[in-house]
Image (cartoon, rainbow, N blue to C red):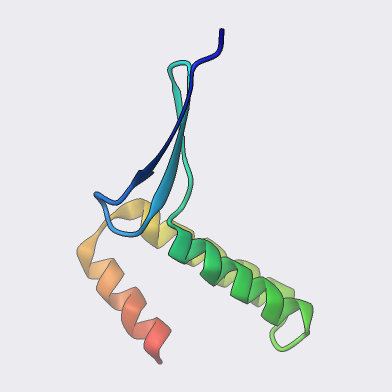
Length: 82
C-alpha cells in the first residue's frame, strides 16, 4: 500500500505544498513564486516581453530561492521593485 501525505509548509517563508509518497518527499516552490512564474508566462504569451527574457527571469528567481542567502534576496527584491 502506498502512503501518501500532503502538507502545507510555512517555515521558510511562503506557502509550500509538500507531498510525501512512502519515504520520498517532493516540495513545490512557494505558491507566491508560482504566481510570479505564471505572470511571466502570460507576459511572454501576449508578447509584452520575449520568451528568452521570461525564461531568464524565471531561472534567476529560482536560483535566488535555492541559495537562501539573505543579501541576494534583498538584492533581488530591489531589482523586482525597479
